[in-house]
Length: 94
Length: 354
Image 1 (cartoon, rainbow over the protein chains, first blue to last red):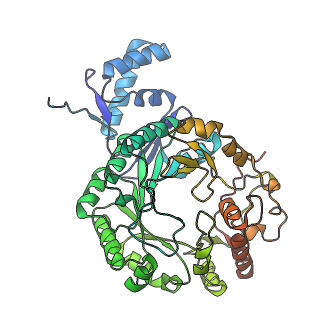
Image 2 (cartoon, rainbow over the protein chains, first blue to last red; image 1 turned 180 degrees about the vertical axis):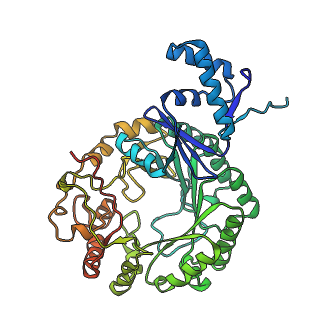
Image 3 (tube, rainbow over the protein chains, first blue to last red; image 1 turned 90 degrees about the vertical axis):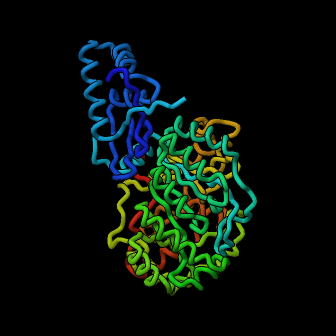
């Protein structure tokens, strides 16, 4: 899983205001606010960075324990997947 | 994750932090209708080039924008309009479109659905084809706008009818409400026909008469009103007269950034400076932000204050003074006073009171 790359779902509108990311779900009209840590991760989900790279950047930025951060980031990704806020990037056929 | 927020929570936060979270973009002034009440004095500009919109959306994301209203003129007169919509959505901006719907096709509606466009607002001026077509001066336009509404509803896109009321169509309110109900869409009426944005006041003759306005202002479904006055604060004189340029603004087809599409005070052009820089550093915008009710000529202490919905843009456009009394607001306030009803909403901004 950690080598996967994800993109934000097409049903999502999002931006970050004052350090917190806001997500507006266009189909259900729900609004979600992320805290600072979740926003940091959310803003790196761009279809380019692998989960492992995002974990490393969190370790560097928050200067925490690698195993703890890896677990937290993985849990967060699982939540985002189950809430259909992100989807696996489809590989382009060359 | 915190759920159960509303869009208003986001716009209120943006207001506190002075972030342009919601921007209205006129992507062109060209139009396929010729409405008698149109506020535009010319329909020439076809807007920025497509690649400039890509750059503008980058700038918007940087500045903190989340909600974008795409309007015109008629935005669909641009052959590349769907590319603009797609680009906005690729930037994860929430898109609402103001259109007359005439140029919509089933295929376009399906594309809008796939792009998760937030809302589409269709201008419809009456339930009567003749009245609508007289207002648009475009024969057959009613039929095409209603057709678009049907397709949008069928596709499950949130759709709203927009209807400015004037002396020609204010008797059709009930029929239009009924049509909207049958079509399962919301309808939003506005009661003020503004002068053209160059100050030409020829459109004022289209406004409702005093008696017609009384009927409209008495109907809480048309003009949201309250039976108790809004309490701003113990010190209303320190309140901000209008929340424009705190959490949103507008951009014209030339790239000029305005306080709002009604208050055409320009802070800069996005082709010369990034939006975030204009937003933050424009001295014109700062002047507007610094205005308080006590700076206005005679609002605080006016016996109509609690009945009044004053637009600084209209005060400037129609009465020539951004700090002065707005005649149209005053006239409507007099009617509310007579009816003993108060405005249900206001743009006066109390949260930033000192």
